[in-house]
Amino acid sequence: MSTWRNWSGTESATGVELLRPSSADELAAAVKAAAEQGRKLKAVGSGHSFTGCSVPEQVMVQLDGLSSITHADRDSGRVTAGAGTGLRTLNTGLAAFDLAMANLGDIDKQTVSGAISTGTHGTGARLGGLATQVVELDLVTADGSVLHCSAEENADVFAAARVSVGALGVISSLTLQCVPAFLLRAQEMPLPLGEVLDGFDELALGNDHFEFYWFPHTDLALTKRNNRVAAGVGPSPVGRIRGWVDDELLSNRVFELTNRLATRRPGLVPRINRIASRALSAREYVDASYKVFCSERNVVFRESEYAVPREHAVEVVRRLRDWIDASGTRIPFPIEVRVAAADDIWLSTAYGRDTAYVAIHQYHRLAHDAYFRAFERIVADYDGRPHWGKLHTLDASDLATRYPRFDDFLAVRDRLDPTRMFTNSYSRQIFG
Image 1 (cartoon, rainbow, N blue to C red):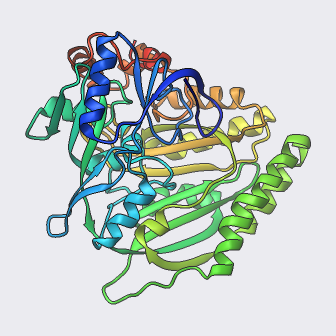
Image 2 (cartoon, rainbow, N blue to C red; image 1 turned 90 degrees about the vertical axis):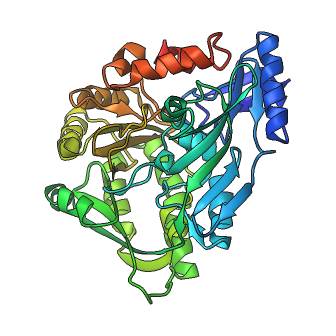
């Protein structure tokens, strides 16, 4: 029997059976055997979700035996990978074929199937989340059969399974529509928060990828603009020493120490944030897309993220700032704002609407409940949809009003998993 724990320490399980299939056939046999025994089964990825979406109750399947690129066509850009492939492995593998993902999130520790199943996204007003780049997938269902799904084959399952929170079965492989490898010019600079909010639409629409981090208790935001370079422009990456200082020393080691100080001396948080907001000075560099998108984050925290219609993003941030100022709560972690294009995936947080994502964080040693509850009350006024892998309190009745195809998803689930072998406490909360 094995013990499992997620990255942030918010969820764990003990006394579960661990299975490590080395092929899709072994995975299908394992699912079929669990079904015949009436046992609950969950596939676990890297455990990077804060919610209990992948907590196993009886049988835990780790997919590291299905963790490689199995087919790549440079001409079409179609790449098939095993569901357990880590994003870091995938990105370097794609680079070897001179290919890349069109958009990525800001970390690469997740497995590709886990990231897609929970709706992981990056930023870009004309680009969707990772799941929009999936063109085919193989899904092992509750009877051990394998459904091949695409827009043309099992189309309703495809619309549901790309973001399914693990409720429909276990994905064994995915085919991604990739693009030729490309370079990004990253421009990072602090700006007054008021200037960023007033110009938010122009910044979001005027860059391939735009995001900003606002440090509570300050008037500064760190902006990040990533844009494709012109033909003939070569890489000019961050220097080794500057990169270590900015990305490792300041963003991880010093940040850990300042958060520990905030735990002991909350009154110092506004001063700490003012220093932190100025510590990372402006920089510009050009590098491979995946190296620009992804960064190392080692400080443990709690996170809640909601998707709102893009036109309401600025109002949400301003209301959140007002609550922080009025409440006296001390927040040493920045608030992150990103954007995405509307898509047609049933449980995607960007389904049917151009979207902004507002993510709030709190250091793991500090209380977060009041802060996160206040955030949920604010975004509820804009039909906010929670990231499936980040902390929230919504249940099926709430979510049914925020997703137009929620009932269609439940109907597919009823058909594919009538005995609920892929359920756990979290899926019972969000799907009923």
